Image (cartoon, rainbow, N blue to C red; front, side, top):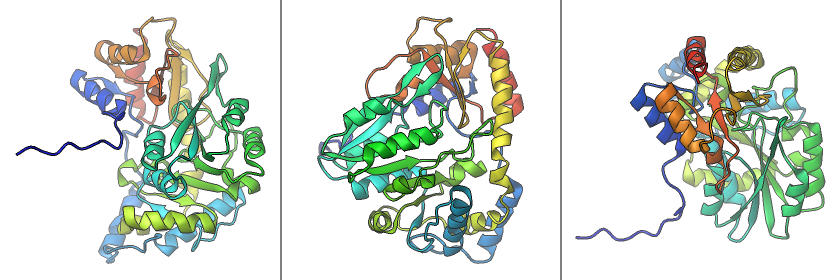
Length: 385
């Protein structure tokens, strides 16, 4: 018998660069600064809260929208931080990680033939999600110079057509480590004012903004908030990326459509994790202290890199540091990242992997969400380049 031929819904998608580089790092015993997750554990109190929830019997399906106590905690935090009062019952949904929140927002809003503007380099799930919805990704490349990356809002405005349904933004930005500021929100608002264009704002690194800068959440901007799906992640905030729990906030009419899709692609999210997170959120210190926690790691890593031949780009947010290597090698980004992994035994991710078409800037991305000992070993090796 012969297996029928299946026409791929995502013919251009192969194995992700993260899988490839992590496998290469394992093969060569390299320090893995490629894939973006911590190599340290979460607060033991969070584990205790989840354990207590399990033992208290919170082990059956949660409500489709998420446990009310968790949605109320999320709403309270958003109101305190960004001054926007989301209705916990109608405007917040707990998701199986931010990636599921992103694809659900796209599937509920984008129809075949709709255009969605994505700002590249970008997180690798955006464009496949748009394709699955039948939409057309419209990439706009960030500008990069000695001062780092920035969004060219004039180019974003020029990319808008009558078919534009959504613009995807990400702050703090993966992979570049840049952040949007109030002027960026105002520029985005000027583009969408008077249109029906929606905003999908990926804010999973919202608590990783440094040097005293505020996080420019779309929730802060009343006009943008009225047309935006705002996505965040407990995994990033509490060092539990493997739990895959996040949330989406949006105005009630948008959230009503979001939930129609959510209930059939996930229905509900891990119950004891939700209960544990709700209990843990009673103490705001873990997320309030997160900028200082990661800024210390960023500064340690940058100080070490400053003694190497790499050229540092700004890292205003996230736990990623981008560097230029054009003073070291003429190799393309993918080849250089592989060489670095094999020969220097430090794994990085080529930024070219975050573009839809080949784009070479001789820049790679490191993740500094690692123990100090891990960063120290990596820096010793990078100093040999």
